[in-house]
Length: 276
Image (cartoon, rainbow, N blue to C red; front, side, top):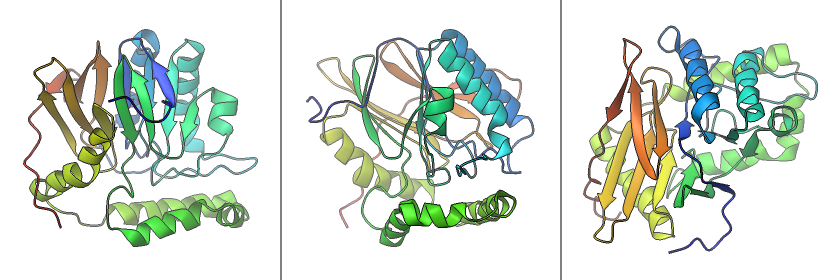
């Protein structure tokens, strides 16, 4: 079924890289993870048609008129190098970096989006979303998100000096990651029921998402040769996972301690829990 709306991006080359939830600027995570991420981006620059960052690249992002967080410098330079090499770079705002303004597009040539988008990638109809605020429930966060994205809230925060505003927000970001959550055997079937299946039934044949800091690849093969897939990207804090779309098929990779990559095998979609 074709999308009822025009895809926001169209890419036909291979491979296309996907990564999310690096939370750069946080002290958490395995040593060396930022350098390894820069290595991944450099590899994308040399061989990829596209690089899609599916939210929360930074633990906090706010675009002051005359300042940006200094933690962005090396990875921003790497993204600009990709663009200069002809790689399409897409930046999806997450729940830690949704205050993305025009700087990425104006200075780096990166295409940025605040909300989920439809994309046509190597002929696949793909729904891209960070994942926060999707599905039913969590109404308090959804209201807060609208408030924080309001121009008045942005103007008010911009009135804070960066030396105060950035450390304060980074502390709040750390607290937000400290919340408990449901175990995977409960959480993931609910995500598939409430978020993924509606997206796939709406015309997509694949969905790529971050946010949950879990790495999983669900796939279904159909009799007509088509394939339905959901890729949950994990993170670049401790899991060190990313995905690639290679000749029309998604693969999820994990960086090992030796520096090699291993494929996380695809598995069938889980049985859906009963409706609420």
